[in-house]
Image (cartoon, rainbow, N blue to C red; front, side, top):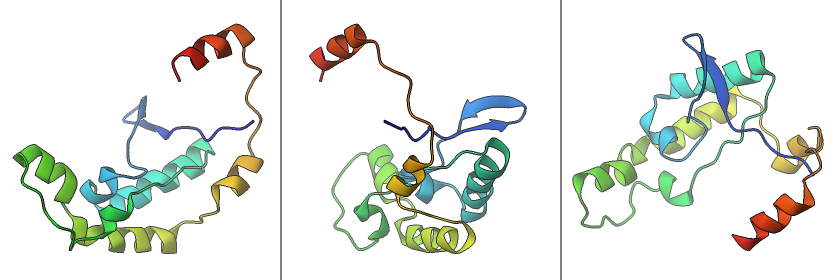
Length: 123
């Protein structure tokens, strides 16, 4: 079994989780910043990055619902820019199917059977 590491990068001298690999962050951050961050992780950390997004995040014509300002911002901000940002990333970076990337990663360490049982109770 393999895993795809979460996006972590050194920024301003500290290791931190930087949520730029998808979802709303593709809509919020400018394309140059996304490109810089993803390349930085690949180059300096030697890690693959899983880029994800929801289909509705590239549909600026989707119906709008009545919601509080915070929810509207979170769901509709920059919908008209997401597709272009994705296309820009696809042109600048190398992408591969997740299975291909996972195949090249080391396997996870063995899981303690007791911990697995406990985890399954919460599934």
